[in-house]
Picture 1 (cartoon, rainbow, N blue to C red):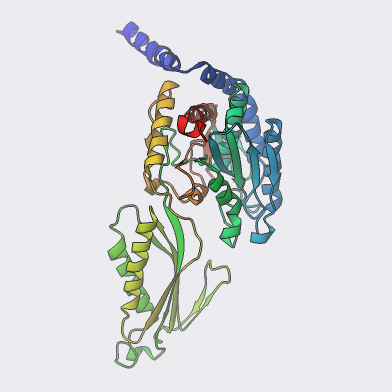
Picture 2: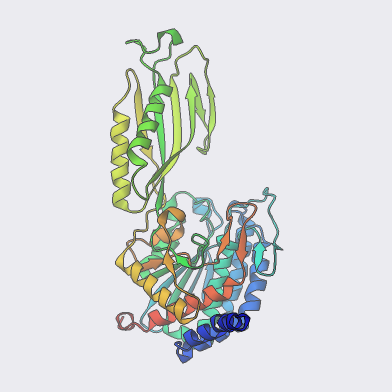
Length: 440
């Protein structure tokens, strides 16, 4: 029995993956060999990158990471530039282009910034064991940036990069977008308009068995409510009414009742201020309120976000919210406004589903197993969303699997750097051979 188990383990570990790899063509085998050859260098690059603080508002750090990755892409023959973010109050982006033969035009998306600013206690990398790196931004998403570079190296070494036009945009403000957002995301949107297919290298839900075919968009909202200030003994009277706080609570409760059951839609009030007077901070992240227990509240403000999986779903939700806001309690008024810009939804399309099928087949050919779509509830808004409506196909989550991103416990599985680079590079190669793109 022990010998039988030993043979089964041998077959699963070595023979089955070998049989799968046999389905690769010569170019694809060269891609695999190149990734294996350069993986150590990629891991050294990753370690260097995560030990540079690039919190969104640390412009010097973001630009330093941009220069680091720019140097690597320069070596591969890309035309590179670091843009200025002065017009939208951020560090700017890294944009790299490679013009191949007429045919497939790809947009690859990464970002240089992290959520860990200079005052964060989480600044340096460490190894939890031989495969897990704990570091700021290792999964979200410097690991994905390194995978892009490693995949480009493999395509070049295999002699197939010349057949693909590639534009890489690594933004400097994904974690905290600059304003106006139209300027912040202009380089990204312009690149999407030139591309056929967009591939995002975020970490998705952290599971290497999944990729993202749909992302929910994110929009901000503000609820402003007014009532009649009066002695609390007169609350509910015809003259005074119920006050601003009661009206705010009614609205938020009805939002929950009407919206909470719709699949893939979420609505979250981030904070409430209410009382005799309220003072909202200029950056909209909170404020202060004054009031007394024996005074009916005159003002209230609440701010939050709403996330939807498609433009239609978002619009329906907005109309529901506006209707609820209009049906005021006695002697109160309410105004609901939505932030301009925000992250648009990336709806699940047939093109995105087709990319998933290609990627799944490649993963199995490599012996890495099947790949499934991420539940949109498990993936937040990301830069890939700005390609919606501009490209034929788009998927995200091709980056480094990890856990606890956006926390001081963020980790990345460095053993997956090579795996993800192989999957991505072969996906790009196979897409370049599709006749519809080759005719362009």
